[in-house]
Length: 288
Image 1 (spheres, one colour):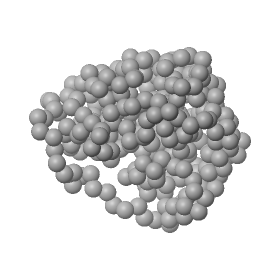
Image 2: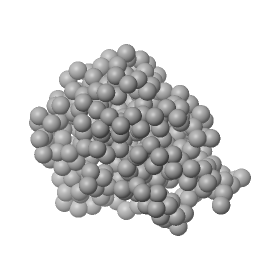
Image 3: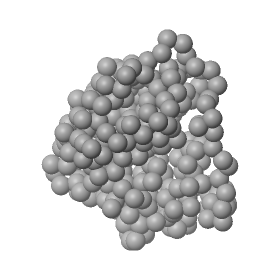
Image 4: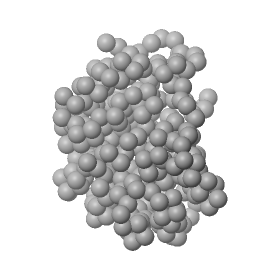
């Protein structure tokens, strides 16, 4: 079954409508974020699952600034010349996690191809700082590809977070258009390398609605499983602005369910597949 359509859809379907986040835990954390000006992707990215994740004690933080050296067609993060590395950032992130009393933290970053180490030194220092200040907090690191350079990936292996994630984002055919400076096979090799080096739980995610076919999604999931990836997340792509790639199709919940069934049959430990699923959705469960 093909998922490509000729006409770009207008208006979001009913299954993409979300309720405003509520609950005591959400209210408390929102207050802390505002009071201490904490930088979470949950708020800056307007994640639809913010209330649910915060209620579970999970939050996502971005390091290495908010300007990316790559210009992916799907991503709302600014691209250009990044600012100087803030070497106090690891302590700031660790302190934010402590203030928010986060049980499971997801750390991600922009790509920093301008740095010789790709930002990997700040990555390992951030994990160390979180471990020191929050010894009971579990961690997922959602990393860039570090251009596939092994010595940079080895720093992540040394940090040994509970989960290491790197997103494929899309199928092979669309990678050049969607991710531009990234390479499909390089991302697969990064995930395979991490597993071979002893990372306990590896994870990846893809977006749908960019013009891929069902067969291509099945193939990408198969490629990930062949790279010994343990967890996969599959969600609907939503256009951040008119400058970004358009949505070609809104995938139905029934189709997402088909992908979940296929993924579980392939042997993934966890498959999160649904219109509102994002990389960090139910992240605290992926360590189990």
